[in-house]
Amino acid sequence: MSKQKNAQETSVVRSTIDVSKLEPYLQANLPEFEAPLEIRQFKFGQSNPTYLLIDANKKRYVLRKKPSGVLLSTKAHSIEREYRILNALSRNTDIPVPKVYLLCENNEILDTPFYVMEFLEGRIFEDLRLLSLPLEERRQCWYSAIETLARLHLVNYKDIGLETFGKSSGFYNRQIRSLLKTSAAQAAVKDKDGNQVGPLPRIDDRIRWFKKNEVPDETTIVHGDFKLDNLVFHQTEPRVIGILDWELSTIGHPLSDLANLLINFYAKDLSGPFIGLRDVTDLPIPPANELMQLYCREVGRPYPIPNFEFAIVFSFFKLAVIIQGIAAREALNQASSAEAKLYASFLKPVSYFGFDIIDRGDLSDKSKL
Image (cartoon, rainbow, N blue to C red; front, side):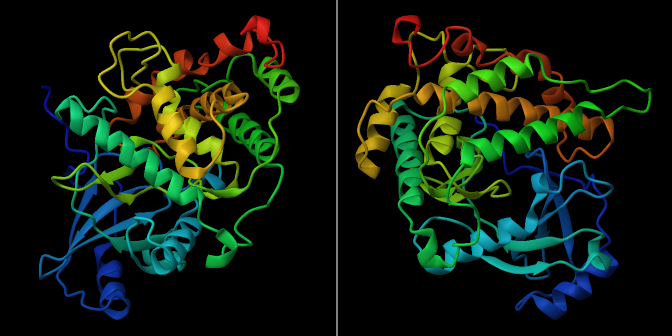
């Protein structure tokens, strides 16, 4: 079995934190915190800089902040939204999320808003194949991920104070418009040598296909980036104890989360950070159809899911925009991850994901599928 890389690993601080301002702020606003403060930065994660805080009693916390400098997209780094939904879920449901302790919107402390939350001791798997685990434990971990997602989608967002967290209709249309705007801004970014990030290929073809193959509206809480490496698993048991990285969360279509979780099953392998399983004949984890059937049973919807390919193509589009954003932040020297340059190098091949579905034609014409 392969050795599992520790996704909770930290390094020295790469994005500077002003300890002289943060330490007294925490002493005044975080009960039980005691100076002096030790800070480490998590190696994993591509968007918002994330830090491990250790106080004098060795109690650990996690701090998430917006990147410093002028941001290309304020929506893509929504620390305030993360705090709001984590606070609502942790206080009012049994959905496994870290507790949040404080939100600071005063830019004089760390130059951008930030929040502090509970540190969850557990396992984060970067490789969705879970090759470091026995076969049965892999299945149980994936089942736990699906069941956790289903539980999230069954939460009544109005009952927990999130009725204004997002619009109740038009999710995919709004998301596509927003992603197009974000992508255009990212494409225009130049590095110090004047090299432009550049646009995603065949944008017009994507938009035409989306318009012809719209899916009916559904409305639930949507995580926005639900995937295996945003889940914390128990240290020894195959069950989810925490869902992380809520910056893209909203009220929207539940299939967007399911497609995001299963996207690797529809992608070819690039022998890089993105593991494609489309052409793998002997999968080391449960296949997509088995996981979808479990999801449908848990939420009470029919299987197979009509036009699920729409959700997959949308997820590929969003993934391409996310990687384009990594490339843009790398060009601006704002990237938070130590591996940002590697991820950015895969922008072009990832940008073509989904066109095998688009080029088959409309989903209504089953003879082409």
